[in-house]
Length: 95
Length: 486
Image 1 (cartoon, chains in turn blue, red):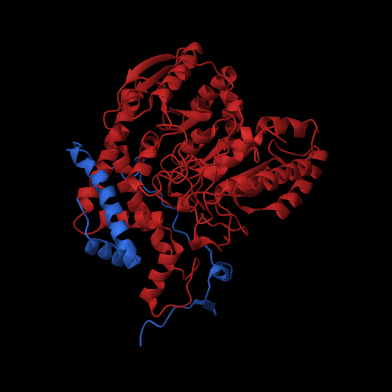
Image 2 (tube, each protein chain N blue to C red; image 1 turned 90 degrees about the vertical axis):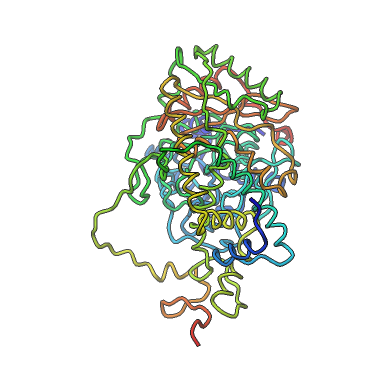
C-alpha cells in the first residue's frame, strides 16, 4: 500500500492539518511505511472473531440521569486566548 | 549522592531523622544541581511544595499524619494539576493551566505526598525516546548521549538519577516499562481501569493507563494503594477492591508457574539480552517458581494492531485541539478553516501529526473495515491468547525491550523502526493486562529490563515476584556513574 501526495492532502483536509509543501514528500513516505507495516494484519485469520472495543470487554457505564450544576464558565474561559462576555471569539464565518 | 527509596524516606520521617521541609529542600537542590544534564522537568512547583512541607511538618509534629505525609513525588506532565501548567510537552498546551486536578493527582494530594514538579515526556505521550517533546529531549543518566526511552522519559530519568524518589507515568504501549528498562528502575503499568483516567490528557482512551516509576517494587506497592480504585468520573474505571499491595510483596512464590512465550525469545532479541534474561529467570527458579514454555500465537501482530487502534483513537481525541477554547492560538488567520489548520500546524509536532494522519486514514471512508475493524478483531485474538495462557501459568515473563537504550537521534527519522521498540510491551495494553519492568542486568554499563505480565487486577502478584527478586539481587540498587559524585 503506497499513499500518494493527493491522499496526504485529503487526510489533512479531514483532520484540519496543514503540511508545508516541502514536507509533503517526507510525510507521504513515512505514512506509506507505517501502512505497509500495518498491512501485516491481512495475514491474521479473523473469521468468526468479534471486534474488541474495550480491553475488559465491558459495556459503557452510564451515570444516573440527574441534572447537575457544572458550569464554571468564567474559570474555563481563563484558558481561552480570545473571549468576551462569556463567548469565545473566532474569525468571521459568514459574510 | 545517595538515592533514597520511598520506604527509607517514610522511615526517616517517622523517626524524625529529617523533616518534610528538609526533604523537599534537599530534592529541589538535587534538581537544581543535576537536571540541566537531564532536562527531566518541564515545570517545578517549588513555592507551593515548600508551603505544603511546612504544613506537613506541623501534622507530623502533632503525630497526626499518614504514611506519605510530606514525601516528595513528581508527575508526568500529562496529569491535569489545578493551577499548575500541564503542557503534555506540546506547544499546543504550552500555556494551559487546568482548572481542576486529575483524580490520581487528587488522591495523592489527599495522601499527603507533595508534588515537586511536572516531568518531561514525548509530546502527548506519542513516542518511545522522549525526543518528540516540544521542550527538548530527556537525557539518560547512564549515558547522557542516549535516550531514557519514552514516553515517560522525564519521570524515568529523574527517579534513576535520584533527584526524585518516585514519579507518576502513563503507559499506552510501553511508556512506563520501556523507560524503566532503559534507566535501570522499576515501572508498573496497572490493569486498564485500575487507576482513574479522569484528568489524564487522552491519547488512546482504550489503552491509556496511569502507573508508577520507582527504585523498588515495594515503593510502587506503597504508592499504588493511594492512587487506585473506582472513580465515577472515569466511565471506564472498574469497581474492584484495592488490595493492600505492600502486604502481599513478601509472600512466597514457591510452586508458582512462570510462562515464557516462545514468541518473545526469538531472533528479534539480541544475544546479550537473551543471556541476561536467562540469568534472571534462574533467580525466579531459585525462589521456587516453575518455568514452562508457552505460546502466544498472535502476539506478533501487536505492533500493527496497536498502530491502527492507537492512531485512530488519537486522531479522534486530538480533534479537540482547535485553539479556540484553550491551546495554541495564532492571531494571524484569515478565516475559521485557516484558524484550525494554522493552530494545529504550529501547535503539533511531526510525530503527533503522523499519528493523527495515520488514524484519520484508517478511519476514513473505504478503509474502516480493512484497517480499524480488522485491528479490533486481531486485538481480540491477542487477548484470547493471554486468556488461554493464564489457564496454565500464573505469570508471563519476557524481555521489556530488544536491546539497551539507543542513542539520541538514532531512530527519530524512521517512525517504523521507532515503533518496533514497543514490540514486547504493546500486547499487555491491547489486552488491558497489568505489567511491570524491573532491572535484570547490564550490557556495557547500560541497564536491561525484564518484563512480568499478570492476569487482570493481579498487580499484587507482579509486585510480589519483583520484590522477592530484588531481595536476591542488587541490579535495582546500582546507580548511574555521573550521579554518584557529590
